[in-house]
Length: 106
Image (cartoon, rainbow, N blue to C red; front, side, top):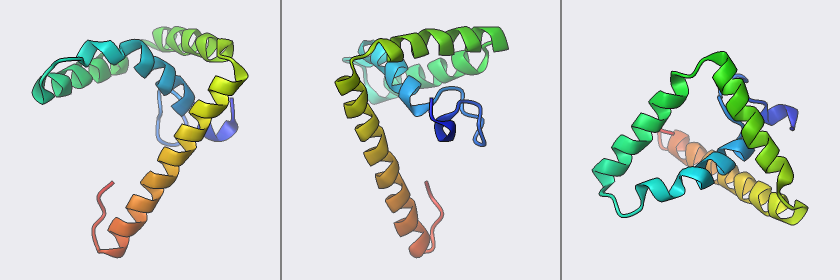
């Protein structure tokens, strides 16, 4: 796992971007067909569940997700890593534009 993506880093991140991709794929069907309000409530509930986990539960979750990431074919990993990189660059650019306009929204 790259050092710059280490979980629990400067932002207190529970999962690395790579592991977030795996976690989202596992939960993507839960919000299907729901209203925006229901989706928001579901995301909030998921975040609360993750935040309420004990250290050992978090470690176990990370280990399980890491094993699934490691099991992906190299081509699939490379494609997902590229998407993560593109999203990060787009987010950085958006922050730059907002900052230039005088706002400080994310």
